[in-house]
Length: 506
Ligand SMILES: Cc1cc2c(cc1C)N(C[C@H](O)[C@H](O)[C@H](O)COP(=O)(O)OP(=O)(O)OC[C@H]1O[C@@H](n3cnc4c(N)ncnc43)[C@H](O)[C@@H]1O)c1[nH]c(=O)[nH]c(=O)c1N2
Ligand SMILES: O=C(O)C(=O)Cc1ccccc1
Ligand SMILES: [Mn+2]
Image (cartoon, rainbow, N blue to C red; front, side, top):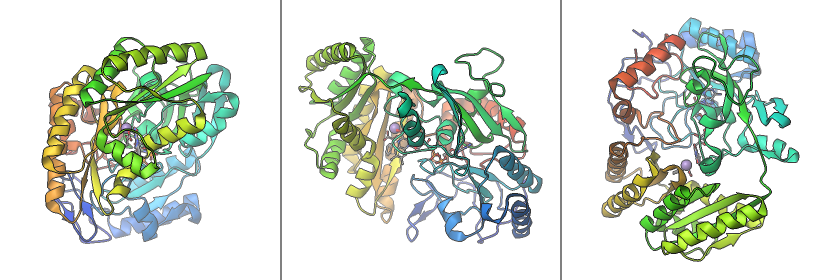
């Protein structure tokens, strides 16, 4: 039973309480944790702050409100306005271990913070506590080009790593649309446009070093081990891939890296219907063309993309494709894919050979989130991220689009159709609760549809706060119970990132 009392404000998160606050534009989309957990006592935080300063030094601890605010939300829609009580910056695994021990001793929650680009409120301080910003641990600690692996600390971002790798003719292909930390990407089991060919974080993490809630240090595949495969005991590495800061601090990640392909060729192809575009994708995959990326943008997304980036693509359901390999192989892949697209009524491929043009095309795709928000000033968006077996995709997207059109809400559909993973972002004006309600209802209908089609409520963004309800449905009672018993072994006092993933505690 947790007996914590709040510090900064008389604010208790009541079970199931939904907040729609106009003045601060924040929305609690889903009920918060159904528990009577309270924030830590003021005197507890004061003592903890002194102990942390003594151990880490003054420059590694802050209780400044602006810093706490900056660490108490991510890039997703705001779900509440609770603040972390303190922010700390460990410089090493040892310091992270000290932080965990000191917080555990006082039973104060800890929230790992990567770069804050998450979309599901994963870094929010649902019950106060200490936000642990990992950015000062920013070294590439072990690089083995001939073995195609590298080990990074949590402050290294994906673009930072690729900047280092490119001089060696190597790259790390998992590419969420933001320049996220690689350990944050591990924690959310992130993905991106290259997953069709190279996989997601789940397939590209060989080992992680973790600091557990009590300060112990765990190497999930054994210390410094980096074999491409192993069947030695349980797969503890993948236990932490997708753990969303709820099982421990990832303080090192050993990753697979790849040779930069001899040739990368991108193409854009427009279709008359969403179904034709998605059927083309399914047939390309079924024909075993080793396509690197295949992304769908619907007419709404294309229109915004054109306007925002001064592009002149057709305003129609569109596939963005990319082929990697030797020149001969790329050309034959592209030719075969072009024939399949043509069979489904696709337009001529618009090619992009030069890296400059390719980057512009893919930047337009990656930036669609900002594009949509900037195209609708003052609005926010509920982001959906369902993933289904690819043959179920045409119906799912078509039905979802029909729902959106009927609702009158702005909701572009796009995403990683090669994985069966697609997104809508359901735009609403925070000062119009009826729009928010419509967006929320659409998201719920879409997720129910995906679960009914043997899919998942989240392909890559994680559960965070926004999808706690859905996880219960998706996993069922035994699944949830199993996850909690694993968490209880690693974090018996529920101190790691409380208020996320699960609706109730032990
Ligand atoms: C414009 C845009 C576009 C995209 C995306 C975001 C934005 C803003 N994302 C989402 C986001 O980039 C992705 O979830 C990243 O993995 C988040 O990494 P951060 O380092 O920002 O984690 P952030 O700091 O946001 O934390 C996310 C979660 O991980 C935990 N965490 C972070 N660092 C940790 C550590 N060292 N140890 C333990 N836990 C840790 C946190 O506690 C939290 O629960 C995305 N995603 C995706 O999969 N595919 C995509 O295509 C995109 N596209
Ligand atoms: O762009 C993507 O693929 C993302 O996952 C990020 C995203 C998805 C939907 C809305 C906003 C951002
Ligand atoms: Mn995505």
